[in-house]
Image (cartoon, rainbow, N blue to C red):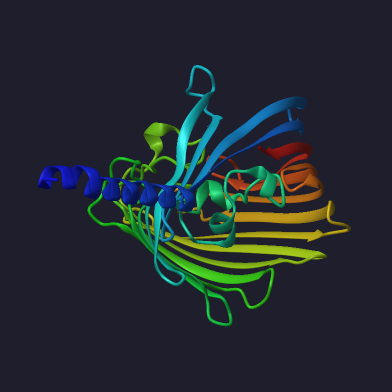
Length: 364
C-alpha cells in the first residue's frame, strides 16, 4: 500500500470520524429557544370630550436565546409595535441583540444592543407584558430612563454571600441611532446590586451622557413633550446625569417594587434642571393565581428643563391580576391621572379619569 492509499483508507476516515464527532458534540451543546409574547387590551376612558372605548392590539415580541458554546450565548428580542407613521400603523424594531461571553465563573463581557442596566425594571423585564406586575411601565420610562444602549458591557452576577452584581457599560449616546453615534464621546453606565435573600434585590446606578444635540434617537426613553412644536424644540448640546435606586421584593405572599430616578439635565440656555420620578407597586398574593395590587407613579420635570420640557403628573391605580399559568394572565386596572403641570399649559391641575384598563397578556 503506497502513501496515497494509506492516507485515503486510514488517515482520512479517522479525521472524518473526528470531525463528525466534534459536530455532534457541538450540536448537543448548542441549544436555541424561540419564544413569543404579546398582549391585547381594552380601554374605557373619560376626558373633557366624553367617554371612549377601544380595543387595542399591543406589542408582539419575538424572543430568541441560544447557547452557542458552554461559554458563549446569544439573546435577541424583536418587537412589532404600533407606529402612526407606518402605512399599516405597525413597524418592527430590534430591541435587543447581544452576544455574551462568560469568561470566568459569573463574570461576563457582552457586546450588542442591551437594556441599559439602570434599575430593576429595565434589567429584569423585557417586552413580554405577561411578566409585568402591572399593565404599563413606569411613566419615567417615557422621559427620563435611558432604555437601550448599543455598546460594550462588563457584568458580574451572583457573587459572594450577598449575590452581588455589577454592570459597567460603554456605548452610544442616547441621541444616536442603531447604526450611528452622533458624538465622539460615549455614554457611561455603572450599576451595583445585591440579592441578600430569595426574592429581594436592592440596587443603584449612575448614567452619564453628553448629548451633542438634543434630538433623541430611537428607543432612548427620552421623549420631548408631544405638544411642543418641532421648530421650538431646543437643538443644542445637553449634559445628562441619572441616579437611580431600586428595591424589589417578590415573595410568596407580598410583593413590592420601588423605582426612584433623580435626573439632571444641563444646558447653556437655562442652566441646570433637576428632575425626579417615583414609582411604587405593592401586591398581595392571595394564591398562586390571584394578586390584587396598587401603584403610585409620579414624575416632576422642572420648568427650566429643555431636554424633555416641563411636566408634573401623578397616576394612582388599583388592579387585579389573575394568572392562568406563567404564560397567560389577565389584569384589570382602574386608574386616575392628575396633570399637575405641563409645558405650554397653565399651572392649573387637570384631572383625567377614572380610566379602566383590561389586558390579556400571553406567551407562546
